[in-house]
Image (cartoon, rainbow, N blue to C red; front, side, top):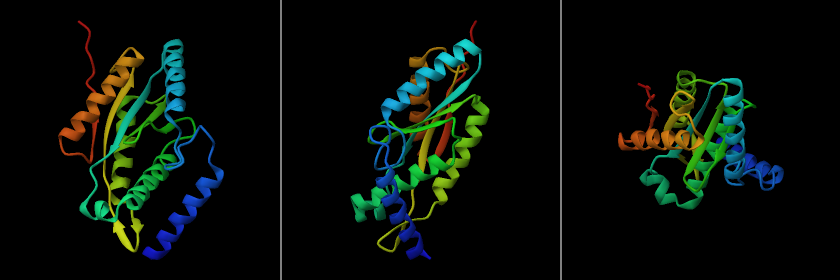
Length: 190
């Protein structure tokens, strides 16, 4: 069974390379790039401001790799990255944007979704990551993720504040040991 999973992973990797959207998708994860994320974020902020609707943003980082993943090297880490990309693509709607922001950071924009719904969806994704079977050289690899969730306009009223709120929530999830979804604080105006 592990051999079949590994074979499927290789086939998915080859297909992703063949169908890669040049410049729009990250070749390693199959997710949208940082430029696409920034463009979609501007659109969501504009739409939310005009139509008085909310959306959520999530920052995600893979928790530090296990000894087994480190021992298997870069190819094992690439398999984990590929698995996270696949889970993010399959676990979000077409109207959402799942992106690889940089080497370690991933982001998801959930259009028209509030903080509670975003938390529930990301908690489901976190569980999927923790139980995902990833195989490299016949060995099963595991991985977990830390996530920080914020929403516009509830946790922040500007694009920069939204990103800072995601960053703070992610840092709190990591501070608590990872494998956790943390919500940004809601600011109360006095």
